[in-house]
Image (cartoon, rainbow over all chains, first blue to last red):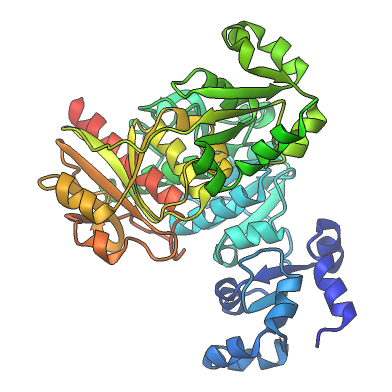
Length: 255
Length: 255
């Protein structure tokens, strides 16, 4: 049976302050936990039902010491989500290590993405389209928020994230690179040629778009052409469409 | 002050059974309500703060008889969402009228989309990409669910929806048309040529994809090329990327 202290500890990790204090975060659901165990994150503990441990015994055998057996009811009382199923893990957060786009690489830049579901979705999209690095403004929602981890569907294990002051970052690290930003009224994404030498793709806040400070570093303003009448697209959707056009263009020029 | 009966009536409309019984649904938030008033929906009533009515008095003048003035606190007690702001409307649902793709037109087909947020997002995406009609399987979540209406960001006023048995529908109405479906392992979307004479684009359930019965009507299996490692994309994201490739291809061939 779960100790009161452990319940208290896990619940505290739903709050950013305590995640930072303990340098730990929660991962919920069997798919995400399996990806976590398979990643370079340091796992503190896994709470799992007996059924889960039996079902995945071959995969889990090298992690046996991490497991504590709990009932489904105990788990459901702990989790943040209705979809919480059969296991929950606690892992150590990573250091906020410096990242930038290498030559021929594109990195995403997020300017104050505030909705955790959107950030998680963007991480999953980046992972689909082979983007390895995301640079976030300091006000972008916390990567280790359980809703971000959940929405990323395990992709948080493969994408490197770096939170920083975007103006300082771009002024130092994007001097000769393409810095493309999504705006209404920019160049059509269908005509736009992404630089073959890589760079940055900047997505702005859900309500306010790219902020004025960050905007001054944008070298190319791009727009997703609209055929119908909706006023805008969600930032996750826009990210996917832009990355799809980037990769489509690369496939075309490679043959 | 709001009468108890009115509060009870509005709360009942959060439940599908009562929406069907009353043939009415709720629209929350000022942007969606303004689009509703500007649409061909029949509006029953609008609850709005005095501030809202003053701010939009020029737009609202022809709808004066519909308004009841309420306080923000009264509204927040009623709404389904935290973002509920300054007004809430009740409108009549539309008849489930037959729809199909005309010559040279693409319609979306949704096979058991179960998440209301996904359905709302898909409606918004359809509206951005100029798709006017969505054919839904009978098990697709209810269009008039407040979460669908909210996620569609007003686009529900411009898109026509038809709920039907998909097998019967496709067997009768898609005889010589292209019926493209999103699958893993199909033809690359980047190579795929959408028929210039229109047809149907089928998106499947969040967990199970396109059902076996519907699958038998698919003439072309298409796949969004993956560069990275994420296992899948959310169905809303996939819809946007497919429609973006459709419209991009059309723009290329028209000029």
